[in-house]
Amino acid sequence: MSLSPAEWEAIRLSLLIGLAAVAWILPLGIGVAWLLARHEFRGKAVLDGLIHLPLVLPPVVVGYLLLVALGRQGVIGAWLYSTFGLSLPFTWQGAAVASGVMAFPLLVRALRLSLEAVDPKLEAAASTLGAGRWRVFTTITLPLAVPGLLTGTVLAFARALSEFGATITFASNIPGETRTLPLALYTLIQSPGQESAAARLCLIAVVIALISLVASEWLARRTRQRLQERDG
Amino acid sequence: MADVMTTPPRLTLDIEQPQGDFKLAVRLDLPGDGVSGVFGASGSGKTSLLRVIAGLDRPQQGHIKLGQQVLLDTQRGIFTPPHQRRIGVVFQEARLFPHYCVRGNLTYGMPHPAPGRLAEIVELLGIEALLTRMPGTLSGGEARRVAIGRALLSEPQLLLMDEPLTGLDGPRKEELLRYITRLTQQVDIPVVYVSHDAEEITTIADHLVVLKAGRVEASDALHTLLHRFDLTHGLGGFDAASLLEGEVVAHDHAYGLTYLALDDEHRLTLPGTAAPIGSRLRLRILARDIALALTPPPGTSYRNQLDATIVDTAVLPEAPHTVELRLRIGTRFLRARLTRKSWDDMGLAKGMNITALIRSVSFNPL
Image (cartoon, rainbow over the protein chains, first blue to last red):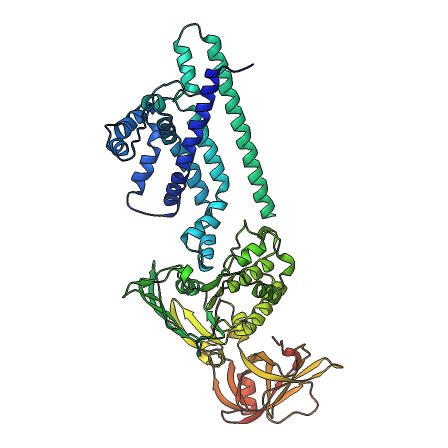
């Protein structure tokens, strides 16, 4: 079965947007998860709630809010445009922002759990050995949280791949720019006589999902093995 | 590193830290060399004190100085974080980093690569064979030794040890204690050693701090505190002991004996040791292992018969039928314990000259 240019385009865009989404939320997610796992501060509950909003809000609402904030007339969007000439809506970068926001809570949850599981006593020991905060975090905390980091990343990537509502609201459904697999499938279903093309896309989506599942399982097993070797 | 300081830096602190219904209120001035033992029952605030010195806890009030450096002064708002204090800590539970091999753990805190120093510490602790192992594969005693090496290699100005023998069985405990004793003699870093075990702490400490309910009950040279009758109960009770130190003058290989000179006139015979002639040995002698005679007895198996003077006595409320004595032997002092019956029958009194008898086999040279 050879794929049509339109199908390739959708696959390429899906992977590009998924990877871009994970790339921008990963550093931010690590920082936020660390804040939540290791610090007490005023407004912690508010921050926690804000992060979880995309998980409970209808994706369309998230897309609309993004449009309000990041649109050319939006508070942040206007500034972005006047300062950097950057406009996010109706671009693949905008789609990456939208799917990143939707995937963010999943990443933070997984990361926070595994950061909390790192023994603070080890961090204290490192600090008495002369390691400052940054070194403690990069050499002790983060490496010991790697299993959670992997799970969270794969989960976030999968979520970004399948993102639909927020993306179509914020970045629209533009072929070759923001039309990812779910959006292409939706388009096909909307037009009569495209059932077999829709079935093909459906199959491709299943295959990609399976591949990422197997890959994540393999990665998880490998890290678990490596950690077990370390523990003897 | 150039040795600029002529006098070793003393640790002085005066801190107050309420913790629930418990309050740590400690004022101390510890010598800048040797081992300062911090002794107390569990819950007396030993570990809290250690955490405050290391900078892991921030007391509500007070100040801490190490030599000229101010590590903490709550009034002036000074707080040096732990990673800038250069104070090494050996924790109760080793706390090795599970994702680094032994070598990685050892070098983690080294301020700069120093292969010579690494090799020296590795040899001192006998951990050559462990370097490539992961911490999860080490036994309790091995892990503790690696933790000690790791702390030493971070080039601390002060080393804190929090009950490093906890959870080890008898032989492992003695082995590690020997390593620590050797190390404190060879490495020129002052040590604060926390323990609730009277025997352990009297083996290793030069200076002793007795903590009770968050306060300092006593702080002085170990041999001074061991002679205080009022501290008997806390410092060993039934196993109350005192220390004698002397120089190895000869070995009798045929009989497996070592001769130790306390001074020009007084010699002790001990079970043979490997200590070289001229080295100094510290002996811990239990008060109950000493017998007294009015005159040197003929035909006895007591190999050690020392002329002594009774300089002080007491009957403790917790042991009304025994008499605690302090004996002077030349310039040294020794604790002894008798039944009140013997005391009366022999007609002993303060100031009397007697002979102290100690069996050689009761010595356990350290």
